[in-house]
Length: 423
Image 1: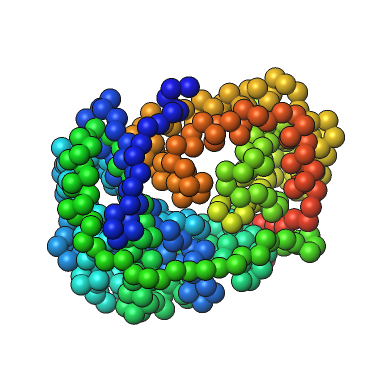
Image 2 (image 1 turned 120 degrees about the vertical axis):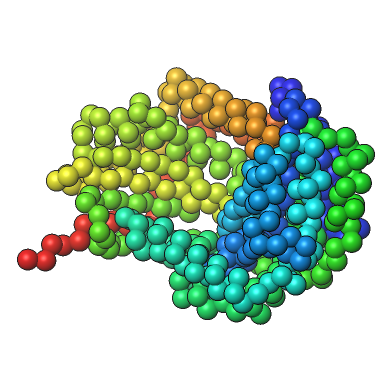
């Protein structure tokens, strides 16, 4: 499939910065996408949320680009920009008219090489407040908002780096000093720990000269983090409950699964889609339409560099028994493990996943992010075909196998109940 055979050039600058170029002249646009190999999994207990906080700090101005200047210049050029943090990486990206490529490269290089001179206590305190409020809005004050971090804490041992949420804990966020964020920047925001992808409408020779002009002189450090991470496991099934300011009872079921881009990861992804990906999917049809005991139900495979999580979430309808919902979920898992799936529903799921995947690549910024993702996780930027082939090779037997391998093991059960009314 020609659309999935993406031509690129990959090379390193003398300071270790990886550069990936993909020329695409379909539209006069350029996407700039930079991944730093650091996320919340690189933190430790008592120092959580620093990777996400630092994502915010990267938009607070650098030595030659004042606060708000990055946003203002890109938006005035007709472009878009943002950043995101996960367990495994932090990325920053812009999509601009191609004649503004140099502007975006200059802005990215200035904060990579010259952020510290512009770092102030006032900026740090401001963003600690912003992130603290974000934490309160998304977790403490959000219905069911604490469920995710409770699941992580139960599913993984305390030392495992996926055992806390990416946003971190409030007390950690509020404790950070200028020294903390400066050390974090020096350790991780170094050219040798980053990969810059440029995709879109540009002249390759000119683009290389711009990359060299703005990034070559930035110094790398020698910091290397070596971790020997033990594969996580659960010695027993864990049952949790808590009360929240919600109207309806909800159940979460979470199992250890496989890491990103593995064959089992794709099979579990497909299994999740068959269970809850549409209104005709197995759990949705049974729980929401036929028995009318659930308000909603969803299954998902969440995969990272170290491991994965398979999760099923269902919200009970008013007055309905959450234990009946749980039993129906496990009955369906057992049926899948024993009988597999019929060819029609498997084909429907695979076609939907394939169509969604190909459609996402029509956007040049999505394509750039895929190049960076494949490079980081697999070491080969052009892994589009092999990625899709993971799904093409799935059959009923492979789905039975992953259902048996992962969903019959110990798990975490969390039930969120409405607050008891005080008379």
